[in-house]
Every structure is written in structure tokens, then in C-alpha cells.
Amino acid sequence: MKTILLSGAISMIVALLGTRPTITVLRKRKLGQQVRTGDHAPAHLSKSGTPTMGGIVIIIASLIGYALGHWFTGDPMTASGILVLFLMTGLGFVGFLDDFIKLFMRRSLGLRSGAKLLGQALVGAIFAVLAIHFPDGYDLTPASTHISFLSDFGVSIGAVLFVIWVLIMVTATSNGVNLTDGLDGLASGASILVLAAYVIIGNWQLRNDCTTALAPNCYDVRDPLDAAVVAAVVMGACFGFLWWNAPPAKIFMGDTGSLALGGALAGLAIVTRTDLLLLLLGGLFVIITMSVVIQVGVFKVTKFKTGKPYRVFKIAPLQHHFEQVGWAETTIVVRFWLIAGMFVALGLGIFYVAWFPK
Image 1 (cartoon, rainbow, N blue to C red):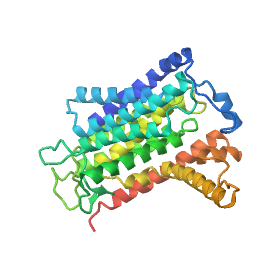
Image 2 (cartoon, rainbow, N blue to C red; image 1 turned 90 degrees about the vertical axis):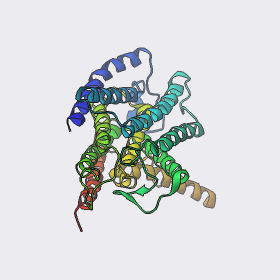
Image 3 (cartoon, one colour; image 1 turned 30 degrees about the vertical axis):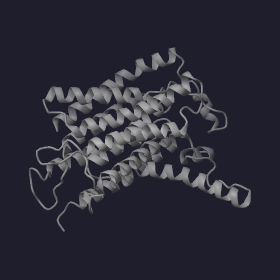
């Protein structure tokens, strides 16, 4: 518990103090958000020029918090923790390339979708392959080749299908957070809530670890404490960043931050054996992603069948639809945070209740 608290506090302080000079540097280099006319509500035009790529601060603060927290407490770093941070950093690099192209090469759409997906898949595949290696003294690896909900279930799907499953999880989660990152503080605030859930889950698994307390409802997880530490450092970094990212935002996380946060959430779900539970914990990300899927699907089908495309929403993702109908940005952000919190409460409730003996 000491490592969780200390690591998270260090990460938060680094992000809180480090974001201000980052904003200054980005402003001097004129690395600001480009807002295309007609994309969103007219109020977004005033955000043009706001520094972006703030996700760099979240990643660096998380890595510093993790390293110093372990150094101060003497707790060893683990394969699970390092792999989740690798996934986060690798996807953050893909997002950085996307932001770099947008800002330095003045191509508004950044990386082409195929190139971005390839980068996500490459990082995800490396993570998946490594995660089924590095067994500990109890022959537990950071991940297992099973699908999981509250824990592993069913038979092993094998290494190949497991890698494919991880790629689906990683790309879906990182793109889901990326789609959510459209209003000041929305993605960072929602991510904090899900990360807090993983601090609780990791700590609960530690207290009911099969290697120390064999019981019917114990957890076969390799490094539950370090999973909680990773969740805490990323949450702390998001807290520090949110101070500057809250409405009206002084800096945006960019794809650098949103892809990194999605990678952290997917990695935590995999190493804590809660793959499918992430659909509940991250319910807000699911809803926003589905709004895009529905919008594009209905648009294409109606255009093909009738020649007159139909839009379910005024604009997708969903948060921008509510902007178009007149909701204030802060109203949308706070209400979506509440929705995210309700999904987290539901997911944690199911996780907790399922532990009790039948």
C-alpha cells in the first residue's frame, strides 16, 4: 500500500509541476491545436492554438512515479508493471507521431489510419507475446492465454488467438479513449475513474492472492500489487494534468495522451485477468465509440440503399452531438464524468459481489 500511495503522489506532483513549463515550451514553438471550421461547435474555434501533445507529461510523470516509488520503498519492479508501462509508452509514441505530423508537417489528419493501426498492432503484439512469458516462482505469467471477466474462465485459446485478442483489446480501448478526448478534461477525468477502479482491484487481488491465501475465491494473478501501483501512477499523472486540462483547457493531451491512456487501461485489464470487465468499467468509452460506429454505419447503409444518407446524431462522437443541441461544454463534461462513475461503480460492484462465497 505504501508503494501505491507514494508512487501515485510522486506522479501527480511531477505532472502538476511539469505541465506548466511544457505549456510554455509548446506555446513558444507554436505547437497548438488546429481546429477545422465546421467540425464542432463554434466555441471550438477559440481553442485553436491551444498547446497539444500534453500526453508526454502524463507518460513521463507515470514512469518517474513508478521508478521513484519502487526505489524509495525497496519493492521490486515486476514484469507485469513494466509491460503495462511499455504498452502505454509504445502507444503514446504512435500518438506522438500522429501529433507530430499534424503540427510540424501541417497535415491536419496526422498519420493515415492504416499507419496508425499498424503502429498500435505492432506495439500490442510485442506486449502480448512478452506477457505470456516471464513466469514467477508459482509459474504465473503476467497474462494468461484465457479470456477473463472477473478472472480467467474456459479453456486456453492458445498463444496465436491470445495475441489476436490482445490486439483487439488494445486497438479498441486506445481508439475509444481517443474518440472521447474531444472536450476539455473529458478523457482525463473519465480515465481517472477507471484507473481508480484498477487501484482497488489490484489491491483486492493482492489481499486474496492464491499464492498466499489459498481459498475458493482467491486470484491467480502474477503481480497484483504492481498492477495497482501502475494504475496509481497513471491516475496520479492524470490528476496533475487535469489541473491544466480542465475547462477552459490550457493544454490538450493529444493522441499522445489518449492512445497512451487506452494502452494503460487495456494492459491493466489483461494483467489483472479482467478483460471483459473493462467493457463495464470503461462504459463511457464504449458508448462514445458505439456512437461513431452507429453514425458511420447508418450513414453508409442509407446512402447505399436510398441515395439519401441519414445521420442518427448531428455529429459524432456523442459529446459533440450534445454541443450541437446547445449543451454547455462543462455541462457535458460533468454529466459524462457522472456516467463514467456509474459504470465504474457497477463494474466494481459486480467484481466485489462475485468474490463472496456462493
